[in-house]
Length: 287
Image (tube, rainbow, N blue to C red; front, top):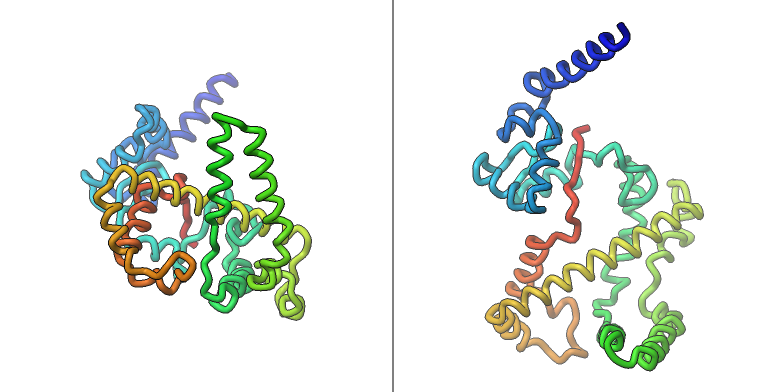
């Protein structure tokens, strides 16, 4: 008897889910494969067909248009205006319920995000940067030496790279004179006198993780992709060179001098479009 009860319960449960997703779900009107509207296993099945999910999504948009169902509770949108509608500050969408309320990046609370963002914003103003670009050439050279040393005299190269790294760490106090640390704005007197709750030790740990990983991964990846695309498209590299030749010398280049270069901006945007820093699908919910 218990077996029949369990079978009846499961049949009723899954049957009601299918009826809801077919007839009552808010996303039922969006076009897409019928199986995708019923279960996420359709997405899993398509993903295992050779790891070509991005091509499958493109085919869906070619067939169904700008919006297409890719799961029982998910749609894929292919339209430039959707970025502001979903991620803009006026958006009514929020992050997935799986996000914790910890850092600026992971919080789902818009009030908390707004308060924390005001403090972070002060660390990225023009006054802080002094319109100066960071010269990474010495560090890049050390990285190249480290890679090459893997195939040659590793011990000697590591000693040289080690000296460069420790020299950079040892000179950090000199950098602070010209470029204040971001965290000086997170724990300064103004934030302590503010009406908002002050930062505690756990808040600094969360935002330290955000500052390190959000800036390093999202910068190194796109730069690598840009170099790869330019190396495999020499004609585009030549056009970019023509765009950069009129600029002043390397030591005189500033962020303001790089403004108004359409091809340079186009290269950056195209690399980000082809190889987004985050390959995970963004899941958002309506408030």
